[in-house]
Length: 89
Image (cartoon, rainbow, N blue to C red; front, side, top):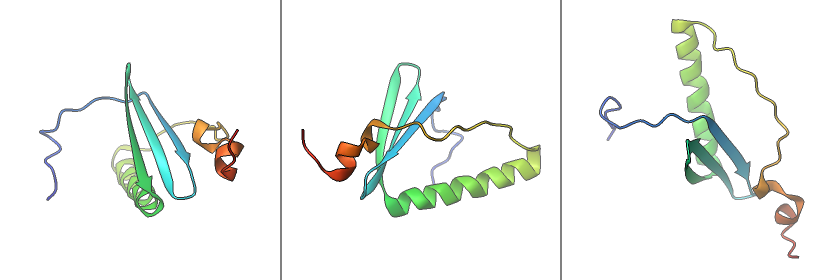
């Protein structure tokens, strides 16, 4: 069942943090002082990425290019080397 997006209360997010481990991706969505966090399987994360890309292409075809900067390389706490290696301190 597809939800009616016009009836769902919306919160605007000013930031999304994404990290990953071998088995899952973690998303933290920030809205003011509130944070919602989600864990996705790697397959569902890939589907999310494909869906976002598809919807952004549709949006830009209709309304014009979205100008946004992205600076990769920010290390998430979930990606620190000790966690990736499974080492304990």
